Structure formats: C-alpha cells, structure tokens
Amino acid sequence: MSDTHDDHGHSHGHHHSGSELSEVELRVRALESLLTEKGYLDPAALDEIIDVYENRIGPRNGARVVARAWTDPDYKSRLLEDATAAIADLGYTGRQGEHMVVRENTPEVHNMVVCTLCSCYPWPVLGLPPVWYKSAPYRSRAVIDPRGVLGEFGVTLGAGVEVRVWDSTSEMRYLVLPLRPEGTEGWSADQLADIVTRDSMIGTGIVAAPSGAKS
Amino acid sequence: MSSADPGPRVLPDLPRDADGPVFAAPWEAQAFAMTVTLHAAGHFTWTEWAEHLGAEIKAAQAAGDADRGDTYYDHWLRALEKLAAEKNLIGAPDLSERRDAWDRAARATPHGEPIVLGRELE
Image 1 (spheres, chains in turn green, yellow):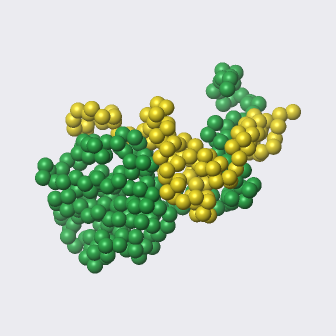
Image 2 (cartoon, rainbow over the protein chains, first blue to last red; image 1 turned 45 degrees about the horizontal axis):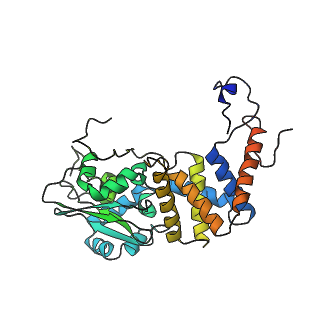
Image 3 (cartoon, helix red, strand yellow; image 1 turned 90 degrees about the horizontal axis):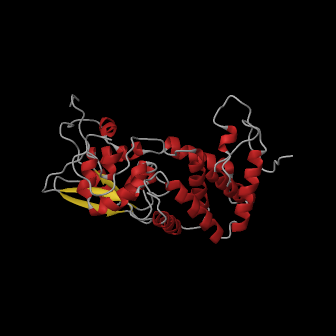
C-alpha cells in the first residue's frame, strides 16, 4: 500500500482524477456485493434494517417498560417473572430481545449489566449499545471494580448497598429496573418515561427526579 | 478530561459518550445489517455469531488494539467475513479479488460520481 497522499493533498478546490474508498469500505462492498449476487442479501432490506436501528429503536422503548412497571404493580410482577413476554406486551419484540431478564434495583441492591465477551445488549428496548459499553475498559472493569466504574458515571452508592453485576450472553440479556425517584408520586407513565435514562437501565446511572419538577 | 472524576484510577479510563449516533460511518451500518439479515435467514445462530465476534475482539486486543469501543465494527466486519467464509456463503479468495475490483472501480471513477463495480481505468 504505497502512500501517495502528498500527490493530491487535501485541497478540495482542484480536480481529482479518481475516487478513493477506505480499506473497510472496500471490504464491506466486497462482502455485500458477493452476498447479494449469491442471493443471500437484498440491498433494500439492508437499508430497511439500518433505518429501524438508526431511527426507530432506542432507549425510549425501555423507558416505557420501566415507567409502566413503576405505575402498574401487576405489570411489574409479570416483568420480573417473564420479561420477554411482558416487554412483548408493549410491542417491543425482535432481534436480541428473545431472552430478556429484568433485575430490579432496591434500596439494598444495585444491578449493573455488562457483556464481557462481545457486548450482547437488549436491542428492542435499548437500541444499539453506546461506545463505552463495547469498550474493553468497561467490559473488564465492570466485573472487577463495579463501584469504581459507577463512580466514573457519577453514581455513588451507600456502603451498605450490594452491587450485582450481570454478564449478558447471546442467550440471556438483562435490563435493569431502576429505583423510582422520590417526589414523582402521582406522575403519569408518560411523564415518568421521560426521566428514565439509558444508563439507568444498564445500571450505570440512577434516575433522578428533575429539580423543580412538579409532583 | 472531565473534572468530575471522583478518584484515582489504576485501571484504564472508560470512553464516554452522550447519546451519540448509533453508527459512526455508513459502512458500520452496512456491516451490522448484513449480519442481522444473514442470521435472520438462518445461515448461523446468534451464539455462533457471538463466539466469532468475541474471538475477533480478543485477537485484536492481543494484537495491541486498545479496544475502546470505537473499533467495535472493525471486529464485527472481520468476524462476519470469517463466518460467511466458514458457512460457504463466499470463498475467501473471492473476497480479496472483489475488494481489488472495487478499489480499481473507485480509482477509475471521477470524484463525486457513484462508484460502480466493473469500471476500470483506460
């Protein structure tokens, strides 16, 4: 791979003789074009999947699950008993949501989720994972130093609170049911869903009631 | 970076982001969608996929990748190339030949025009 960058420089004002694709772009095009020719892929279907994950699936789905559990005790029991079915009741089904387990935070126990192998994550309720979830520091440190990790996320737990770390796998995906914050009595599920953060459902955050919020 | 850091760190920093974009570049989205499609069509199980992806991540770390999450889709793409080859969905020599064909097509395509496979320099 000869480096001839200096030949064309970075000026956009002059005429380039050709285009350039990066190494990964070339490899992706190679794979996609071959698989399409063999009939394994349909480019239009790929675009549809990308649109779904970029624009339609995200942590708001999980926030609605949490808000429902906070406002509906029956739903909460079902969620803790069979999370996959209870989440499907709200219409959130699909890939990587087949084997869901919900872990409830209490004043005594704080739950936190990691995937030490490869970043398994419950896509239907949280969308795709953030960059830090996929990083080696999180994957290793969440297990050996969960309180240190929580501290970096700005979460400090009392010494009496037990931290439980759950390692997701391709067969088991966890969602944390965070503690409902004080001062939100009487809030509607919609209001509550608005304050549930992505990190609180991974267990690297807690849900704080916005200051000045009316109850 | 942040002054909110509460204490000494003997372990590597965590990379942080706000609710950033799901994909950092279009190719990442393409690689993601290819895996999802092939799995949905039954060409491999998700456990097989997770094992391949996990192996690539380990190999990259062993080769010196800091693995801070920003190279995740590099590992993803390599895992997909290998799994697709193992499942005989493509042949490995095919893949590098096809990569070269795209490279030639790109170089033969004036800037700004769509790159079409098969285009060659005169």
